[in-house]
Length: 354
Ligand code: PMP
Image 1 (cartoon, rainbow, N blue to C red):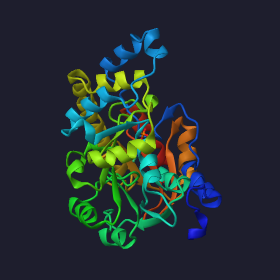
Image 2 (cartoon, rainbow, N blue to C red):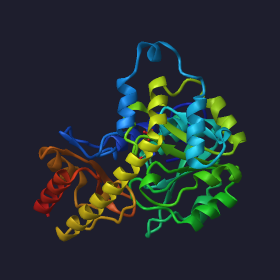
Image 3 (spheres, rainbow, N blue to C red):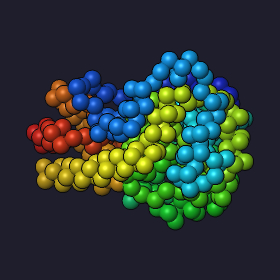
């Protein structure tokens, strides 16, 4: 892609269509959805109680403009002050508005390759020129290659979607210490494993850590995510994000998810997910496949033809994400960790195709 593909402040049609096509590659409609890395165990009972007890006044009134109560609860959970937290309509919203805040004429965004495909899409829709930075063969980030881009915004994802590994602390620290612009660290899967930068983000100044209630907490349908950064940076991002991005019910549900009961439920669900993931990895290996190690709630499995494999799994009632021609990996399937009967079916179908 050339810089002609982006025009500051406008959508770049050709590049954007390509990026969206990559995102939408064939997810067969299937009874069992293992394509989005959402919770296999539903949500905490404390969250369901909030939804069930919703009354008209919760719907009629506007929520608080900047979700002060939820920010305080998140701040206590992460171990930072409330001014260092902002919330959004999913962490996507925080990602999007961080790009928007630092977009401008001729500016670029350094984005790992492969990584969460929405990062490239949000860079393009905000008029930033995306510069892909290939992961190293060991799936870690190449810090020098990131720094060489001199990008206005760097997007790191740790644990990384879709490669399922954490980026090394040393490489991330090197980028944070020397980057010319702002560094986003997307920790959507941090509850499952890997090291979090969230509590350190406020003192670092140039770092925004993205977290979400969509995965381990099971609230993807309610769209609640958050960012942690220095209070000065959060103030800039909030100006761009605007008010009223989290609904009243979303805020109440997220508060319940962070209650003692909610957190105990989440930790138990994460422990069960990890056990299932490790059992799934072992079964895939026994079936002759070579899944990549994972610290997340999904597994990346290289296959000869991703679209064909996803289609076949779809015919067996299971939806997974086909990722054709991933850089450094080739065709692969990204499969969320579900309950065992579903994972067992995946192994049987893939073994049958080998
Ligand atoms: N970041 C990563 C790495 C993701 O995988 C996802 C969801 N697929 C998101 C962010 C978006 O999460 P949210 O639902 O909070 O917008």
